[in-house]
Image 1 (cartoon, helix red, strand yellow):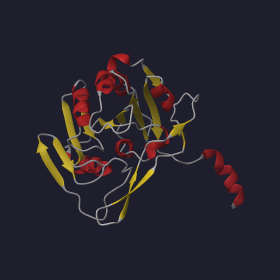
Image 2 (cartoon, one colour):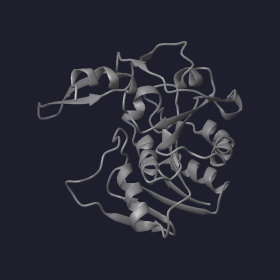
Image 3 (cartoon, helix red, strand yellow):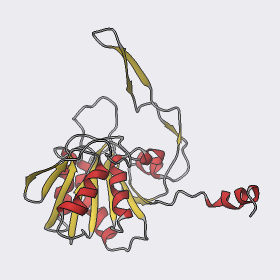
Image 4 (cartoon, one colour):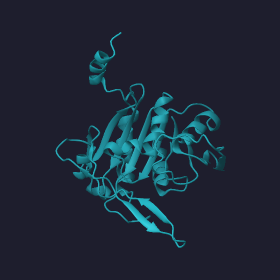
Length: 254
């Protein structure tokens, strides 16, 4: 089984090291193509206004000067000798839960695989508090990654679908199990915009991700993580709101 690994945290991210160890428990045909630098929050964006450069860092290990979507596109069209059997994206440093999957470069890399007809799984390690810097433990992902992936690679994926996996912010031995759950939603008292002043007196801003609330009791990925479980959520790329089609059609009769 040929597996392509990618991420949005960059080619040198510790989560990619964890993912490679997990993937090598499944196959010895591993290829890596990831962004040169961190691309968190890049979503499903493509680089269109400047050239994308491809760099090789070793056998079957490449990076691109672009987004996670660029990395998957380059891997499929320029790097791999043939299409992979599976794409794994991650392990992301931080959660990709609820509505936030729309911002996620990790999930979007898996989306690009799904668009190409390749089974794709996004993996993210939730951490417990803000301001931890690089001191994020991937122990839950390292301990449970193979346990989650082995059953998933054996099932057929519906067309234009992907799987979103999140690991809870606890030690591997404290994870309570795996739950298959739907995508959650946030009550968007969303993170702050922090205003500062640079040494020349000009204002600048940082977007923060803290302060996000969610409504409990809906048996979603948010609650699964809160309860100490690994969350497994199937996502699909059809954003059509089916229930509104008939109503809108009455506004525009043929």
